[in-house]
Image 1 (spheres, rainbow, N blue to C red):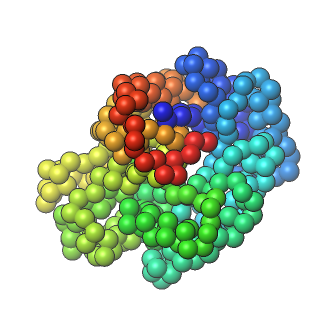
Image 2: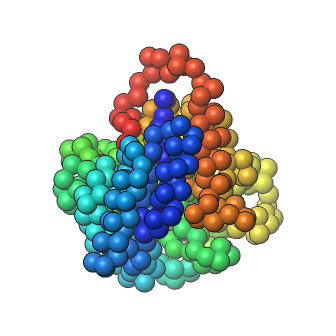
Image 3: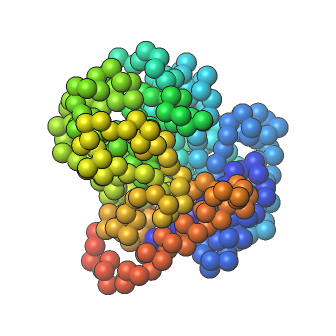
Length: 354
């Protein structure tokens, strides 16, 4: 059976406590992914110590099963001037050591730019090789802790207007790119590195991929589609978010999103507002978008950890985030309806729970 996890900010002691109580109320082991903000927590000695104390208090108050530290892309100024912010990852590894976390989540990106600014990376292959070299160094620094490498998708920024976003050559982590990354990991003997998928991010990538495949040259010059190459488009006729997911993944981020269907994608005059909505909407409560979560067990299998990464519903807060808890309950219900016999004899290579 899969494990489930919720997400909370390490700097917010009330959030931590709320998530612990929510998981206990559901009769589940207390697994948490600790969100970090950089400047607000692990970037300075004072806030680093505050976040550490918060997590230690959380561990004292709850019977904690497992912790994972999440490294977000927080500083636009940094990630649009450096190819990759390895320093933030190193601080997150140090924080994981301090609080006894089992793994660190980091994003796959390189050479990001804001909006329609000119690309800083020459090509995808060079960016991929450079990112892999950084991962190799970080894997050594992690000293046995697992590095979980996450897809970015279309990185929309507030106010989610379709004009404020970051983009770069490694945005999408398509299934064939995940396969290449695994080849690199095996070749280098990096036993503590695993790729994984945020299914909502994958939905944004799928919408862009499917639209570019349908609309072709009419999208030339649109920077939102710039890093989907002709080689990518030759890999498949249609891309679904769960195509990114497989049974070898030990970890998953889950929230709902808006997936455009084949009829919408094929429209010559697809409404720009509909397209924009489909590439900025994520973190939705399960059931409020269009991802087919009932089929997720067929892709992810019966082991591993699924983290609910869901934004609060209207009227809720990041502390009292009922949408995240309701989403966990809904996904657990999907899995509990599967009998143990359905997983019997199924290969679950690499699907270790955190």
